[in-house]
Image 1: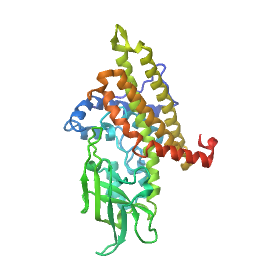
Image 2 (image 1 turned 60 degrees about the vertical axis):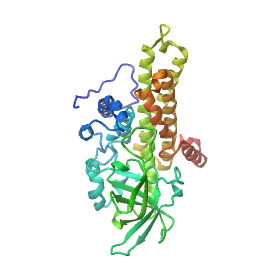
Image 3 (image 1 turned 180 degrees about the vertical axis):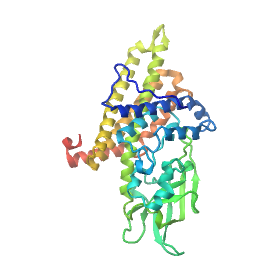
Length: 406
């Protein structure tokens, strides 16, 4: 698992103006994901899990290669990489099915600025070291993409000694809950000076009153589950408050901006892998003595796919660079919505074409196109559905005008 990584630019390969250090990180991430790809079929047949012992080994390799916690400051033990470099890592991660590349984890980067010494020692620094993992409990049955409609409540009480919050409600789609050591819970304050505003709390697992209602089966085969989780008078110490009361939405927006950009990056990787696999198959599959790649209708599918990937990659890298340059956060919010919208829908179209090119083989679970066909569908839903992204983009267009937005 420790083969040397060589940075090579093939003749005619677009460089997208990447610096040598960017390309070195990209090459490490590609070598890492290339090592994961042979285990996809095993994972598909075993609930998304790697063979015994390989999970910890790959996590250690990700840490050693600087691909783990790349979004956190070096002063805390993170990689301290630029947004563009993080995109390059996640793009390569997107080339792997079954969520296997989630091993290259990105603990909450926004937390570093507001975490108390207690929070740093208890959660964030151990997460950077790969000793702990988090998940987010935000979505509810009647509050999906619009988190302003949450009904889970938090009430500050002091009925048994130290003041604490009592949390009540039910959260849906709590991704990675089964793998997490602690949970970020977003709730609405039911009383006090900030009543009606949002609060973000950290709840350790296990905590009395926090229980899995059920774990639905999803279209993809990931080891990370997405259960429905209930909170019944869950006691949360005041020291577990993130930031201040009323700031819960602020942290959610920070997280959404980051995640939408990284979703777009992973969609680039998925499309890249699909085009490569479908193109290779079409070149070698003979129909009537002629390779599929010479049939015009297949050529059109491949041409449309590679063109859309080129456009999406250019967009994503541009927004990553704008983030590194410190451009206006509200404009970046809209641009992250743009790239999430375009890249996720692009990946869906590419996956559909790839299945069609593979034909019957493309409908077999042992085929990469079939797995991606199921997996990329959710990219248009989680972290804000495509429809919500369009609302955000249109709102910023109306407020700022075309010239500021692009």
